[in-house]
Length: 235
Image (tube, rainbow, N blue to C red; front, side, top):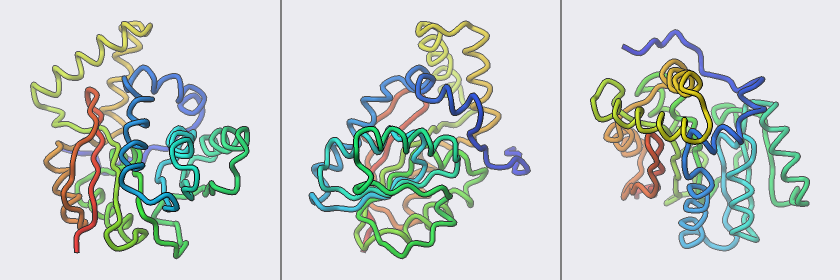
């Protein structure tokens, strides 16, 4: 049973300072994943499209997207001030302040009336404690999209008590240790996922996307317990 008394996890301290390096280990193909997302959007969106990134983190999504779309207008939302500051420094270092706007908030608190061509929901859904709150988050995202707008959902997922999930986690542990982590460090990382994040099976993710109004949902990336899906709002 999910412990719904836990608050939504906030990234602070060492979670921020180690974030970029750690993601390269615990999410194999991290850079490739962002390239795949950008490549799909490049063949999906117009050259002047607007993109809303929810969970902008330290800016990896933004930096990859601006490299692919020279005229895309990007707004990034991130509730962690520490992570947002890192993202801001990266963006300013390549002189892109006019094309990129950063806001320190959750999407529920984002009041801008702008409607976007696509929303990228990046490792955020896993922070919400139950199916209802995840579905409501997706419905909130929809309110910021144009008709027939798109979503890219990046999230960890799985049926945590299943033998398949346990096998996948053990394989991820092997990969993590081969990347330089000790067994204790690898176990600690895996336990933190179970303690801090709320994973659901892919069929439930697809169901939540469908209830929010998205159709023709396609998985375009998978690495161990992380996946990426793209879908479009129906009529």
